[in-house]
Image 1 (tube, rainbow, N blue to C red):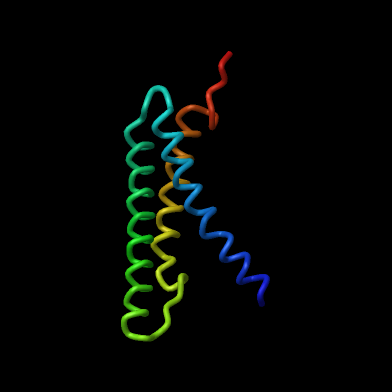
Image 2: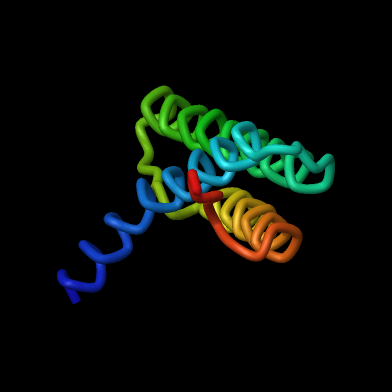
Length: 103
């Protein structure tokens, strides 16, 4: 059971990295495609919402003397990762590859 918890905890920052990767790819792609950039920005906004909501839940738990779980609002992170993966898929579909080569 502890291994599953550790795997779930490791997935949280990886989800954030996927969102940031999608934004980086969308911003550095040439030419920029609006659907790719829009989807990456939606992922970034959802990631920000997850951070704010999770932090607010922790503060609320401290104020009331109750407990809170980092997984209680994980749906926001899942939605952010879904938008980021969608952005990367749109980019790959429109260019045929994840990165342009220098050749």
